[in-house]
Length: 224
Image (cartoon, rainbow, N blue to C red; front, side, top):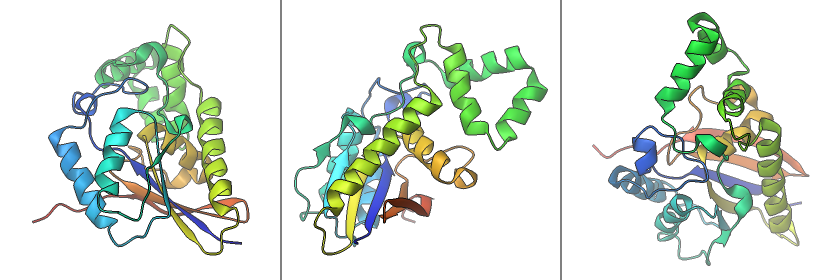
């Protein structure tokens, strides 16, 4: 059976990222820095022959995908997959990150807050915080977002593995929190404290119906 090499990319920095605001299903364009870093990532991935590309339906992911695929003429038009879209923050969409931190500190106290940030369950705690602060109760849950992204990546891998006679490299352009949810389930101790960086790439292999983390949160270097 062939191995499917998934290259999981987080989109480039956006205007809302730069403003320090939550950005789930809300969208904004890449900043100039975001475009430049996506171009560096495209060059870093230049030696990889991709067999297919998939992207979230949100504009920032599609913009990043176009920048990368511009250096990969072997790729046909990327497949847009709603299952790859970012975590839904519900009523917290667009909220400043600093407000979230302030609310948690105020409710829990600084000591408990620091313990939660440093704990092994910090990612699960983070999503619990979003759910507890969202008065609309529309924010996704850890179980919900993990199930969605896991099913999506498994479906893509199974499809690409059908009748495959050789290993395949698949480009996946998605978002920081949803990809982190997948990696937290797969290998929680290797998920970075500050999650995945913009224009980072993480490689996960799919063989015999199992995922294996190969490399995580690799970013292109700036030119001197």
